[in-house]
Image (cartoon, rainbow, N blue to C red; front, side, top):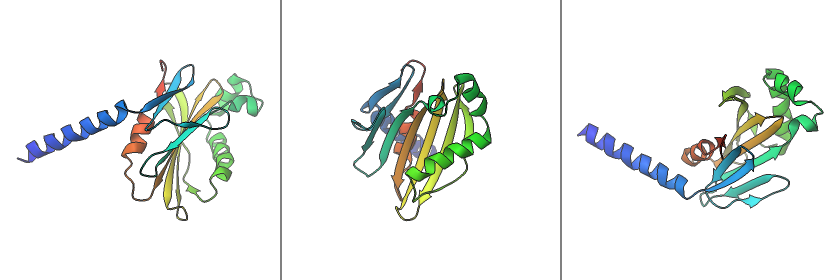
Length: 169
């Protein structure tokens, strides 16, 4: 009986997950990277997009030519972006845009052959958590942010981040 209930719960879970992603709106951020939003995102300044769903969860994506902004050629940028000191500086540059948040350390990882940073923060004042991923491709930072009000499920955040496609978009 327990196996039957578990299988039924798993099936419902998977079908809800698949249904949620089929109605999302895919936005191409570059030649080989895209992400899907739960509703049609608005366009912000430059190459940025964002939306807020009906539960108050905020989703955003942006593109920044970071190597050019700091006057690095791509080879130099690629050599420093993997260093923890550079990641710390990146976080320090990110913090002023979210002054009410306390951030944990930057986690550096490889995402399909590309360097990526994962950052999490929490705001007691705003009663929310922020999740941030930056993926670096050829000196460009592709940033993905999800702000979850306290008590909200991480399911939509997970779907948003899992919708990031690198390669054929």
